[in-house]
Length: 624
Image (cartoon, rainbow, N blue to C red; front, side):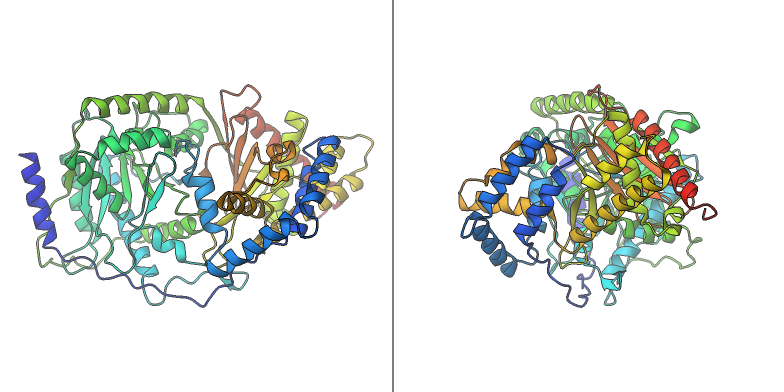
């Protein structure tokens, strides 16, 4: 009976014209990412090792480097191979990073890979407001989608240069598919009509909701809201198997479960509908109540992983590129898959959507569709014993991960990014040096630290990382609490540390990334079937790529905060969201490591921020 009903609805949907073909604005050509000079790159690599390894390890690495760079040696051959790759590809780095960092990573997507963006809590407090806001949010996304598909496109400038818009066109209708060895990304062909539905999840149940009329025009907010009300009325049951929890498991485990799941035709059709949808919208039940002081931290955790198998984690499909969460209690946010989307582009989209949502009710009367829109179609799944077993295992693994995550979000009220700017310091570099000081005071040394930066100034550029530690930063953090050092000397060291970090960032933004070049060397050797260079096999390389501090910054005028989990079990993640007058910070760690503590690092960071503020004002009075 159910199968017949699904088949009838599928026939009805087949009579609906698809939205018009997507036409993409092609901006002026962007420069291609340059091929790095290996000799200069490795010189900077050696400097980045100085605060992290012993003198003996550093000398050993230096000897290996000299052997690698000898005339007519392996370095020259790899550089030539990289040059040839750059000439025949749009971007020599992007695909390699996507594969190595994301698609070949077997760790679960929640916490370990997919960041969450926490948006300001909405004013509504019941399901009626939830559905109204959800309808407006979908309309805002469709408005953004129409913008990037228009002839004018969405021009973005950075330092007077256009930014690459390529990834915007992969946002909608894309999804990650798990595999045994590596995942792959399913993309909608650009020469074909785009998807015309979104996936909505409620009470572990998935629905296919059409968002375009039969003539290709998008539904109005009222039309979407009516569909949402129907959907809610048909998703009251709460005893359903949380099939979405499968997407939270380790990727190879989910890959095995996925192969078993889609062997059934009903399951395969439902999964394909989710994969091909524009986005996923999760209508969450009200989370547990927390005190106001814990609200930000608990909401961050809720967005990252859904709260566990007994909360909203089954109300997700983490493989989707874009996954909006709208809670009945006014919480809202977004989880996105970094295999397809980067923070800078996601934040641009969110800014557009939130501006759309801030407008008053639309006065445009709804069009009468040529063909009556079908109600949201429920996606059914079959659960044979082996799939139920996979779900139970995924629930156990998820609950372990949820209980292990230690997260602390706070707003530092003393000053914001306007303060370092007044003193000719870039806010990002200033905050990074303060973080290094806080970590040094807490743990007694520096650690391998990276900060993610956008490379969209280049054609098909995505992201890369800056190595944050340097001899100058080490010298400063040692001097900061040295009573024999005068304030002026400490300030001088602080300014040197900030400038060094600024220079390192600029070099990466110009395409001269240390870690991009090291990844290229590794990939070229593997593809050629030759041994890796010794410098990629020694202790120094292992230490310098064990990112104990994984950092980032939200450069957006929106009121939001981003959070993600640490990259390594004994590490932290720290994301800054500075505004003009305050700084919102999200710190996370794992409870399984006794050496790390998100709350303590947060406390030490705030002390470091106040100390650096006081140091600058002491040496430059009257310039607050």
